Image (cartoon, rainbow, N blue to C red; front, side, top):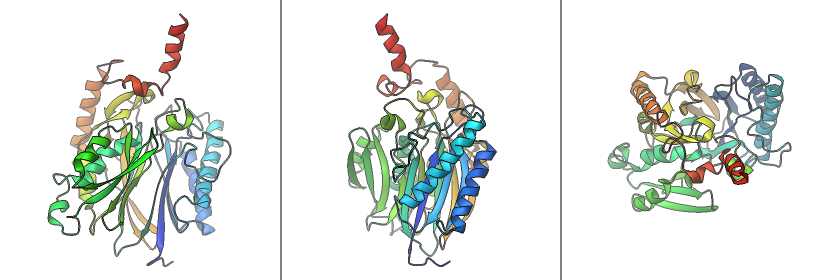
Length: 364
């Protein structure tokens, strides 16, 4: 297969369709079923290639194809895979079976229906390394801090200073997910304006990043389940795709932000702040108070549409200190119990089960 000079679309689509045990992990039979489904799609030429994995209790579908972004064919493939997985999860009595499936009928696109989606259409370069980040027990705003560090902070990314092909900086597309507005801000010249927005990571989320010439560099999922459903249906567990090298941050610069386990919203019942722990896929099974939140990083070389890999990028002792740090922060935050700042502020608790408790108090 040759796709040189043709576009290749990378689609990462995830859903929580049932936890094993509780919210901690994914059942091997669910992963096997998804593999079978996507293998058949590859055989019938719907896909160039695919990889199935999990982060905590989330099923992750990583796919390459030539259908473009928002393809009804690809999104229906993902939806049907999640739906079949949900049926199996119900038979196994997995916890929260079909949690991210907010409808019984596919409407042409999984966006707004529960699953999280990150997609980018690219023309392959001479070498095309990408990192797929997948997180559990947190929200889409979790990517704001590391994406800023990768693409705008020279203390993290020295290429912004010494690489002429990066020196002009990048453009950030920001989504105001509560008021349905978009902003495009250019760095370094609008860096302070950018930080004014993305520092409020529950409201403003980095959707995509481009070079000044329009080349796509990164894209994330921005779906917030509570806003879609109007009620608490679990945290959003986002995904993100980042391209590296050749005028973009080096792979080491892309991974470096995760040496600091910054605080993110999510954790137990989607109601707490906790540290984002970088870990290998095999240890991405959060069980301590259903956490702390986890992030895994799969590296691929994309070659003629094929996914060469994955390399489990956080399966590396150089991240041990970050994991120890995250555990220490987790103990510190947990000691607060039900008090803020461990528990989310009242504005975010509106999308949890707390309003039901407050209703009962009103009756009294």
